[in-house]
Length: 118
Image (cartoon, rainbow, N blue to C red; front, side, top):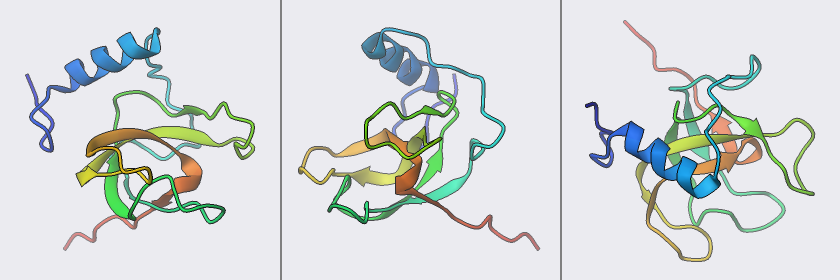
C-alpha cells in the first residue's frame, strides 16, 4: 500500500476518514478548468483578513477528492476547494494544528510554475 511521503498514512485511509466525517463519498470527477492533481501551489493569506493560515507555504494539489464548488456566502463565483498536502505541517490563523493536509478554497492558492527539466 502506497503511503503519503509527508505522513506515512496510506492515501486510502485519509480518504476513508474524510468521507466518514463528511458523510458522503468524495467526488473523483475532476472539473476540466480546475488545477490538476500534482500541481504545486503556494497557500496564501486572504487580502481581506489575516487568514486562514498563519504563514504562506508550499503544497501540492492532492487527488484524494476532486475540487468542489465552495459553498459559502462569501465564495467567489465559480470558486473551487482543493485538497492540498503541505510540504511541512502548518498552523491555522487561530493557532490550531499542526495540519499536514486541508481542503482550501482556490482564492487562497497561487499556482507555482512547473519545475524545468533539462
